[in-house]
Length: 70
Image (cartoon, rainbow, N blue to C red; front, side, top):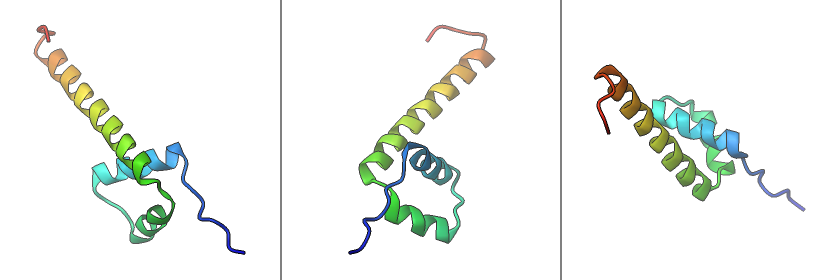
């Protein structure tokens, strides 16, 4: 009997998504992630990370320009 592939947890999924935002990945890490990541979890993590990134950018711009209203 073969073991089912081990599914990556939330932190491993977020780590893979954040590395993909940065754009640098080792080939072996990519191959490992491809076998263990849940595609739906990757999409959710990507949307979440993208939203946090945009919110942080907006807050930085607001802080720089003197807190003008949103």
